[in-house]
Amino acid sequence: MATRREIKSQHENAVIDAALRAHNQRMGTSFVVESQPVRPDAILVDGKTQTWIEHTDAFYPGWAEDLTSYAASDKPHRSMRTGLHSDMDEKVADAFCKIALKKFEHKPYRSVIEQFGPGILVVGLESPWLDEETIKAINRRWAELGSPDLSSVFRWVYLGYRSDGRNQADLWAGT
Image 1: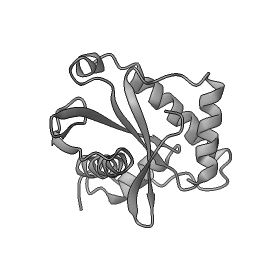
Image 2 (image 1 turned 30 degrees about the horizontal axis):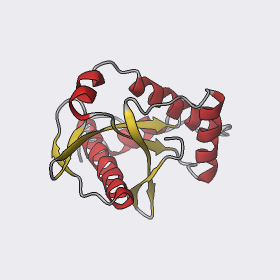
Image 3 (image 1 turned 90 degrees about the vertical axis):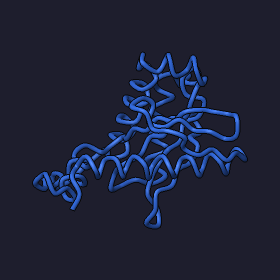
Image 4 (image 1 turned 90 degrees about the horizontal axis):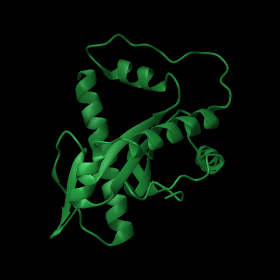
């Protein structure tokens, strides 16, 4: 079994790879990971063109702890609360909006933006109830916040998710 840190790194790489595949397909590019500094998560290159990508996750409350502690060798398993759950989509939507705005306001990206321009944000959506209604809730919540413009920091925002046993990503319509 892997440690929590190893699991987190593998998860981050898988979500970034999914977003990179989606971005390359959608934009007709061939970006590959050139390096993985501390910040941002990866520098991407396509010939002479460079950009950057940052990953984060929007978790349903308790789901992250359940997933990582179940798989980690260095942490006892802590199951998500049992019983009835309500407003699942709204909770993920709130988590998405908070983390996207937090990443947007993160001042250390300024030097990265000066060097490469606005980059790519991929937000992994993590919930046992993830479906199209979750995306609709995210879009509603974003609209309630006035549809903040993230383009000065993130030119593209991708939503990462698991489907058919693999990581995938779609360009978010709110970008």
